[in-house]
Image (cartoon, rainbow over all chains, first blue to last red; front, side, top):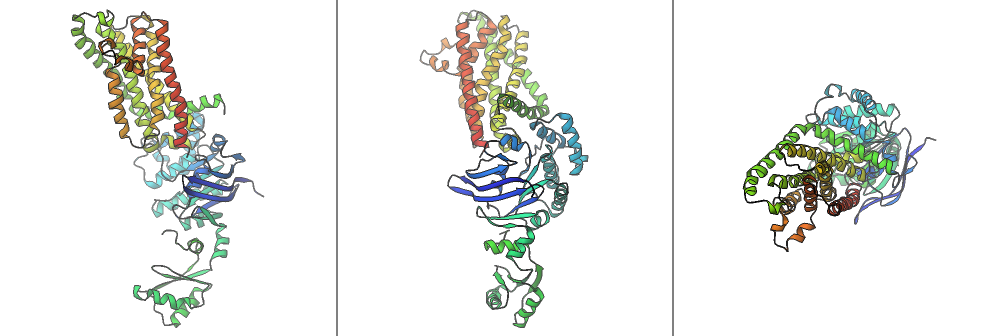
Length: 309
Length: 262
């Protein structure tokens, strides 16, 4: 049994009358990549801030690396790496200075920081920008620099709050690639995301959060098996027949049908067979798509809403 | 988490400010040299030549330049403290994220606060040392005790910086700082026995000056650079300034924690 690095029991965060996190339980094991998936406002960032020990829980228990998050913040934070949602780099310092300043907070000697900086900048492919100001760097470069910064203290757990939000697709893939390599090296990752593909790519285990609570937990494969069918048939109809078509399709033999604003989703084992049945009924969809189920479908099933919406 | 960690942590929190300062030190040196030269030149020689002609009995029989120089030293300490303890504190959560970043490390909000104050103390010492050297060159130093005016000016500054930083972290909009400068700092600078002795003010106004920190700072620095100091009044001025700084430190620890640890 791998070691438990983070344990939350009834973890709660309230801001005045607003409950951001409502009594959640979870465990994080050594060496895994653990994801909090959910829409904006689900309570993911509040949970991350509590795990980062920069926000005291309002209720419940939170043990990190065997220590109480309320009392032992400094010792815990010494062993965490944090990549916040917003870039918090000092834009008027150079790439290298940003790492130096950060390393000094941990009391690391300058020669150690210099050595680690060289290795980390190489890892995030920023060696040639080392002595340039941070300001003109692209969004993806800044995010990679933030990741390098979070690794200066050689953390036991790396916490990433929406690591690729706001990046273009190419930059996202570079970040994913670096995070995947960290995972390969055995670094324990906790990340939040509202991108299902990010969760599928990076996470060994996922909790789906919605309205401050955990809606489901498991490996991506388990969640797909438990909450959705192997395939999905997506159908688009002209707006004037959309609803009528929906009613007809509801009568067809699908495990579940979702009538969304712009399309109809049929959850089935065999998408092509389902499409054949739809066409037999004389329905004429504008476009059709047979695809595998994704975590997006899991989310839709659990919450009745789509992740992006 | 004992005292040792607190000291070490404040030291670690301090260093980022030097990294930032390295960027602007040139312009800062210009202003900390040029400022005193201009002030002492204009006040001491310009205004002083007028004042001295009319007799300086009410100044304690010293030339106006010698009277005003220690006061400007204290005023400059206040201005440095106010400048360093307002916008930079505010910006450290909003603009350059210095506090936000430091928080993710072993540093606690109180460490971040004390580290920043430590930097302000160093800035105060730098500016005050430069000022005293220039004042000496102008011939306005009349006692060997003037060397103690350096720590006196630093303590005057700290009596402002500690409580002001404790307040700045709670401020929602930076426009409040301009109010503090206009309605706090300017009257203090004008009516704390700086440019003219308090005895020139109506009797009922004087007690108001006695409760302001700048008056104590001015009086303390003046006793030290002019000589003829009395242990009693030095004790009162020093005690007042230290209590104010100490109260600021206690409050700041709380306001920083409340603002950063949410």
